[in-house]
Length: 424
Image (spheres, rainbow, N blue to C red):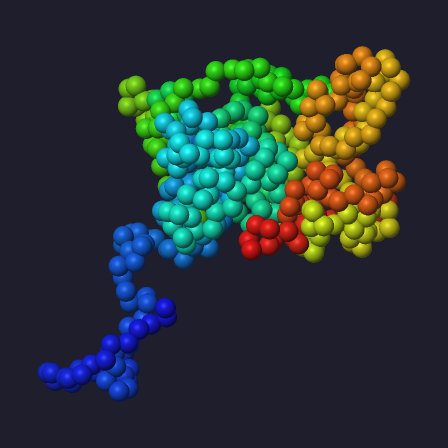
């Protein structure tokens, strides 16, 4: 509705000129515009002097994790009218989630967390577009999606996932706000890479060892032994994510935030803390990851599901030269075969390193994990030219690097044809 009209049947009192010297409305009709009706959903928010609801409406927020923290963040963003949320999670809802997750119900057990969380966000506020992304964020979060994000919210429960999310945000130079829980304690980290500290800067040696332990030397995923979950309560999840959301809202408004800080609460003593985080000289991200902020990204009609490696190589060569090739060295490697030295057996395989499990790579003869043939560059001679980019492990809207060593030129190519997948 753009406006509605009220018919004035009689007139009392003296003529009063409309404000601004505007002409009298024709036919005795008074026209009221939609924006004149102040009691809308966001009226109380607009009373905040600096609040800009249009900024929130246009904002893009990536939420990694849809558990207790993710539920709170998604709920808060939906209530505030954030225009687009992308929620990434790999898990299904369990009964134990119901005491800590405001968006989940008993009938949701067994369904995917991200899917249910997005449904509830839209139910809560139809102005919001919430898109679930199911899977391991290492492999399913396209860098082009983060490129369009205003802020990244980390609502995760393990070191490895936080490291990978931090590296994605670092590569795109995107601000991220990470929250964590432990019993009644909660903390929030704010990162604005590459200038400030990142998540890996704050890891202790024991944390780095735990992260490395999870990485198989064969670049195959290992089945994790059952471990106890970190005990948490919904109260601290609400507090930590409330702070996380408020910082994100200020980022969206272009306001200053405590970059490179750790903020939190000791729940048993009600003591709040605020620590400054320094960039660590031992941080792997600051050491070897290139921040692409400010670099030109070439948008193309290519898509992950519809375009082939040959299509991508042709596009790369248009920009860098006839010897151009695809380099995935920034963020992934591809297993193109498996071999068992003991049995002299080789078999075909095509999977991302880390995504193929040791059990799936066992030799039929000796039952030991086979050694993978891993590639991070492709020039078309490997025999995969007709394979779809998704088969090579590229997610929708990803950004890849093309190089030509002879000319020394390189290009950043985005699979921009996937924009409708996420943005409609």
